[in-house]
Amino acid sequence: MKKHFPNFYNWKKVFTFSELAVAFTVIMFTIIGLLFAFLY
Image (cartoon, rainbow, N blue to C red; front, side):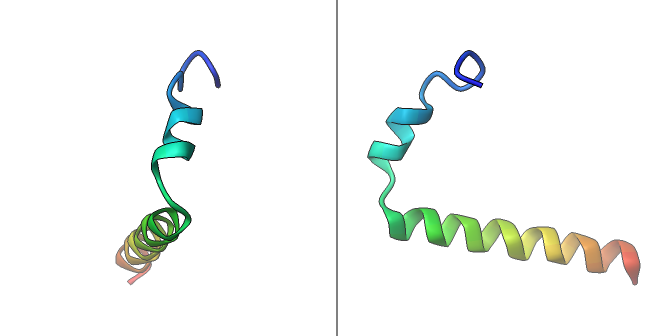
């Protein structure tokens, strides 16, 4: 993981909790949208 993502810890310092929460929400909605697209 460290070799593939060398800037992982730097990302944790750069992004704030709110930004991570927004990004996580967007990703979740995208995944749910894709699931509904495949199911229906």
